[in-house]
Image (cartoon, rainbow, N blue to C red; front, side, top):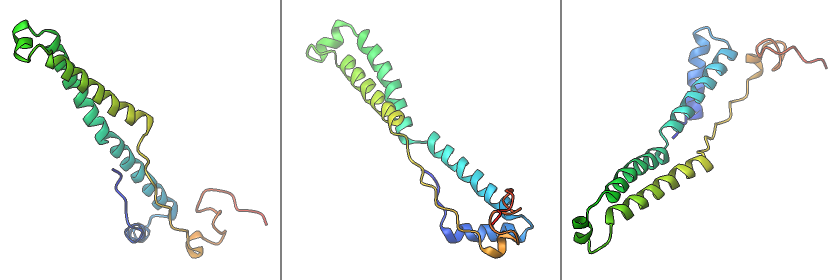
Length: 138
């Protein structure tokens, strides 16, 4: 889950950085880096990955136990190799979760950046030296 910041929190943080002597480009770069780190952490800790991985691991263990069960264990379960069937079911469920993760990755909505006020953009306008682009010819 991606951590979302309220627009007023973002504006306050950006204002603190501006007062500390950072330019608008520095502030925007820092915000972009933090959002990328947050998206990476959300992707790593997606619950589908954790649940699917655990079901696959336990499914393998229980399936192996079912394959090595003796006749006494099967007779105890009224002739059904319950460990084998449970292990296969767990494997299928784990594979389903991992396939779901692969086929439908989690979307991370990124809130739009606030527009740059004209006084913060500088004398060359929004596409001037503050953004690193050459000024537009009009």
